[in-house]
Image (cartoon, rainbow, N blue to C red):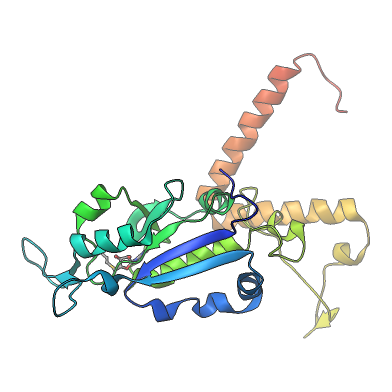
Length: 255
Ligand code: SAH
């Protein structure tokens, strides 16, 4: 699914704190891209859909327990009022959700842009999640006080992948997770810092050697720091090797 060139990638955020947007997304890369119309942001106040005289959006949990729960009727009304095109994904930020990975971010960035619902308090009435088919998305195994910061994280990760946002096209393809490995160490001037110099290979001008050094560093870092990513990467390498050898079973020379 790709957004039509006339409609920029769009994030519609439902929140009790619309003043938190664009927040950090209003500066630097994302902010410039927002101003230039590469993407659009709409933060909508859930409370505007409250109907009682106290404008209440939450109530105590059925079955007892601490805290408050966002009401299904109010949130459903807010979602309906946002009038989201059916092809746009409807997400709910939630620690129980599908982990936000670079692969997932790439999927979202390639689409028309999501509706993002931000929970608060103890969370959201399950019936609105079911009735509006919300996809729960988690930014990590820890609990935040609300979905807003998680939504900012998700949107930031998507926006930097939109065409025209990053200076160089490559800066999005040669970094951590883009090929399943963590990024190699980076250096810049000065050549000598507190007695530490930039590795010689990086100033050698030998592009093949630089690439080989970076690859080796990426592999060593991933193996040392992230057993999970390393195992996945190794498995993928094995599969690719099997596929290549099946395609050309008699080839013994490397071309
Ligand atoms: N009681 C809930 C947590 C509620 S935290 C539970 O144990 O699952 C309040 C809100 O913060 C959530 O509704 C969600 O929108 C947001 N939130 C908290 N942690 C998050 C995370 N790791 N990823 C995405 N959203 C999160």
